Length: 226
Image (tube, rainbow, N blue to C red):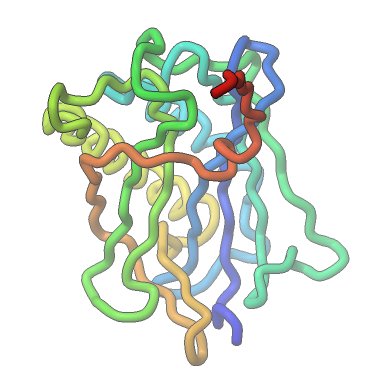
């Protein structure tokens, strides 16, 4: 099974700790032609560089609570084939963009735990295979609502607004650099491949965790005799 289309992967990368920290995190989006096709060749570098400011704005937006010890350092963009391999085969390489300096998130960490994330669901008009995608973003400084442990409605509304603004910017940059019909999309390998344009975002008020990060952080334990 394949995705049935060429597509682009855009990933944001960063780290935790100090500006020179090494413990990494990443999140990303898929883009594919909804109508027409990619320009030949698509301007992967131009798209990535044009999108850098929008991703940074999302990371530092009000009420994102990414945390001042959570940094974004760059973007990696890849042009991929129907199987998710670099395209053209043997020639294609990812384009890596680095911010001039690591960009800190917002709000002093005081929230639940360092691997906390906020989840944004990406939804299209249709239902079925490829109907929903998700992307995750650090929420290390978020303060849960007392007695519920949830994210406040004010905060998830802000995250949804910031995510909407970001995806609109990615769509505009894709249209001008990758192909006029290229948009942020959900992809599935079911059948002959499914491509659905992302037309809405939904943010969950439950604080989630980045399991890979949680598993990567070694535990410090103490014991007591019984």
